Amino acid sequence: MIDLLGIFYFIPAYIWFLLTNKTPNLAYIFHRRYFVRTRGGYNDFMSSLYARMVGKYEIKTSSGILGDMTHSDVMKIVDAVNKKGYHVLEQKLPAQLVKDVHAYFSKEPAKYLDVDNGEKVQYSKKKVQFDPNNVISPRYQYEGAQVVANDDLLNLVFDENFNHIAQEYLSLKPILDLAVIWWSAPAKGKGANRAAQMYHHDQDRIKFLKFFFYFNDVGSTNGPHCYVPGSHTDIPKGLRRDGRFTDEEIEKIYGNRGDEIEGKAGSIIAVDTRGLHKGKQLTEGHRLLFQIQYSNSLFGQPNIPSYQLSKPLRPKLKALKDKYQRVFSLIKEV
Ligand SMILES: O=C(O)CCC(=O)C(=O)O
Ligand SMILES: [Fe+2]
Image (tube, rainbow, N blue to C red; front, side, top):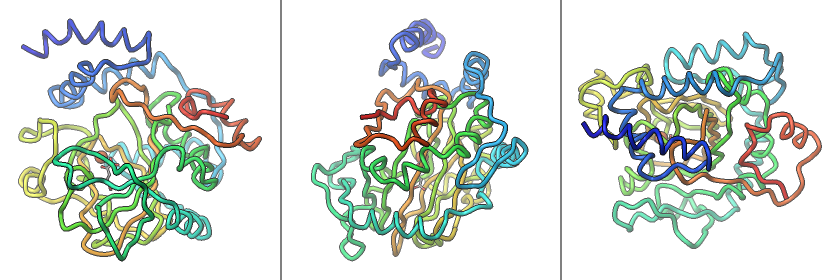
């Protein structure tokens, strides 16, 4: 009943979004509700309309950190994600780049998830350097401007290969709407829900694809990304609600607790996090993870980040920004 009545609100609210690029809070609540109620059907329907409306860039071959990728190289990855919900790429980031980024962020101060703040997701005001020997939070996160201030990460943000894969997965010119790097650390279960260490569906946007990059070796004890294979295509009875799920609930329904995606430093994973996923709670060590997300629309979560650059783009990146305007629309030049 609420859902049916909601349509009378949702349609004008959606038109409002088209005019202003802002999602009203209540419309976002309905957006999340429709995902669960229609078992993703709402998202698929909207996505096919978007694909028809927006269209694609003409990309024959993309060249980037994964090499020169043809349409068929890209489709192998897209097909794999379509089937399972995630795919570990064959290629890894170069070892030197991994070392440099790890060293850079070991020194760069981050805001940490404040675990003493009830159930609210709140980051500290103060920034601290991540100290693996004195862990005070399960998650230390950097701001958008800190991400794009690092040249190696900026190159990944602009890398044409990821944009190419995302375009084919989403069937349109995507928007890069998230670029975030954070440390995960052992916190004995504190803040696990808010640190995304319990199973959940991401529902921020209508359809999206994330790339995860590991900047250190990740094994079973230091926080592998976990994913329930195939869970991106439907929502079984018992899980048709918003929120977090325990491992026991997942096991009861799927007969297993999902895949733990372990990987060496430099591993790259393409993930549709509409499917059930989490970061496994760490019992030792740490994990430095970089993530970019491409979406088919900015409709959804009303807080849209923006990425303010502190210096002019190199000519190569500037050319990519001009060529792929929709993709890089949240990256603000000086
Ligand atoms: O930390 C992880 O591996 C999962 C994070 C997560 O839930 C997300 O990025 O959507
Ligand atoms: Fe998530």
